[in-house]
Image 1 (cartoon, rainbow, N blue to C red):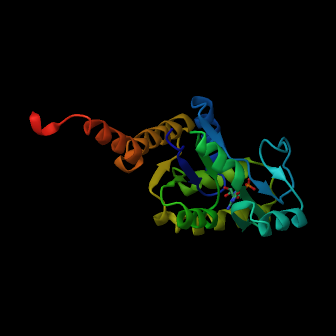
Image 2 (image 1 turned 60 degrees about the vertical axis):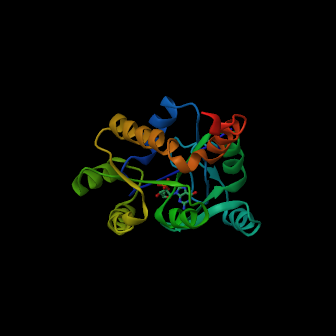
Length: 210
Ligand code: 5GP
């Protein structure tokens, strides 16, 4: 069985990463959305184990120091990290895995997995992004300003990604990422085992006779 893809999705706060990932998972039951650990307190409506695995700082450090995290980063004053074990298991079972992580985490994954597929989500305009950050309502004015400034910094990190997708409409952005997944699965490099098997089958014939 072919190992599942490792798909990394990043983008500034408010660009709609969560909505795009939800649409992707709705359309593709084979996709596994990796739920991260975080020390950030839950926002209204967020559920433990669904949006994040909410832990305190001591527990987070234990996980990090015990090697349980594939990558980790401090973002907007809180710690976030990807559980290593489940990602490896799901990929081995042939499921494609999505990591919705920041650019610091993406850099760590880039160093560890050369076959990762890196997608950066862009807003149609920065005005649009500011409107979306404001609309969330859950953050304080200082937090909103901090996230908007951070968004500009994140844009500078775009070159480490393989693909840029503009999120003007959620369904369109999800469709474009599905096209990326389909194309990535057809890369010759991912078919080494299949090619080897085809060539071995050829060995059963004496090709010089034909
Ligand atoms: P939020 O608190 O708004 O849900 O997320 C803040 C930022 O942390 C987002 O850019 C999100 O992609 C990032 N993030 C969420 N989970 C992880 C993770 O496991 N690792 C890293 N490096 N970033 C994460």
